Amino acid sequence: MASQETGSDLELDNQLCFTLYTTSLLMTKFYKPLLKGLGLTYPQYLVLLTL
Image 1 (spheres, rainbow, N blue to C red):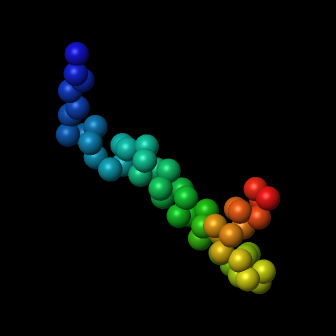
Image 2 (cartoon, rainbow, N blue to C red):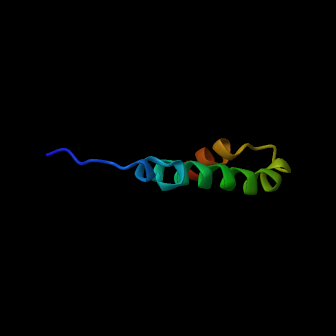
């Protein structure tokens, strides 16, 4: 049985993927000035954390 989505279900503000995307952008924006002094980008910082 397929679920029926209403127009409001499809609005961008109701999508989890949009919330995760905007949160990711905010985190990158927050870390950018902190990492600039180290000469690192946020993705480079994440790689260093995993190593």
